Each structure stands twice: as structure tokens, then as C-alpha cells.
Image 1 (cartoon, one colour):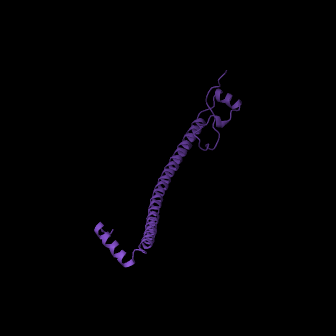
Image 2: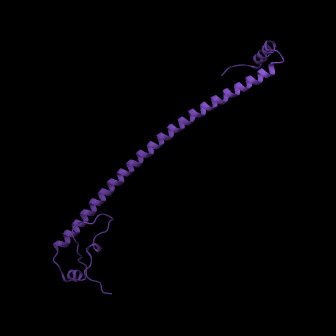
Image 3: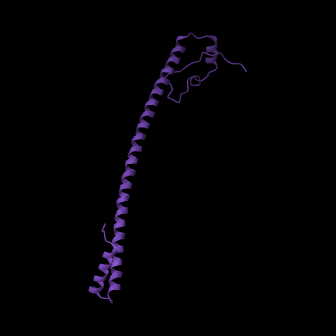
Length: 143
């Protein structure tokens, strides 16, 4: 900051000794040291406040980046869920259409007589069930 050498400090001390006098010089030196200490603490506090603000701005930027990434992940998960739901609905429709096209056989009549709920035969993809009942064309297992 200031380029003051040792020889310049000695000149300043001699001038202060002559101007202030030897009896008041220690008190003035203490007061001057206390004022310089306060000034240094104030400067350090201002630097720390500025550094905290800079860090806070960086954290806000990181937070917004993570929020944007989370939104994009959420959108992709939602899109994948919709695609899976559409695929599940088309599978359920094709299964129900295939069952309706086949004539009933003795095995399906036995299943209908046993009153097996329709949702036990339906594919369970964790999606909403397709509208309408689904019947099974599997033979009854005897145990």
C-alpha cells in the first residue's frame, strides 16, 4: 500500500519526538496504534462482508442450476411415465381385444364359473386399469 522504509520511519519518529515532546509521545503512540487497529478491524470486517456476499451469490447460482436440473429430470420422468401409461393401456386394450375375438371354450367357461376376478388376469404395470372386464383363456390348474 504505502512504500515506507525503515529509514523513513526513523525520520517520522524523530519529527514526532521533537513536535510532540517526550512526555506526550507514548500516549499519542498508544492512541495512534488503537486507531490503526480499529481501522484494520473495520477493513477486515468489510472484506469479510464482501466475501460473504460473493459466496452467497455463488450459492444462489448453484441452487438455481440444481433447480433447473431437477425440473428437467422431473419433466423427463413425467414424459417416461406418460409413455409407459400409454404403452400399458395399448397392451391392456390388445389383450382385451384378443380375448373378445376368441370364442369361449370349456376352460374359459370353467374360469367364469369359478368367478375369478377380472383384475387378476390383467397385466399389472402399476398403471390405471383398462376399462372393461378382461377374461382369461387359461385352463384351470388342479392341485
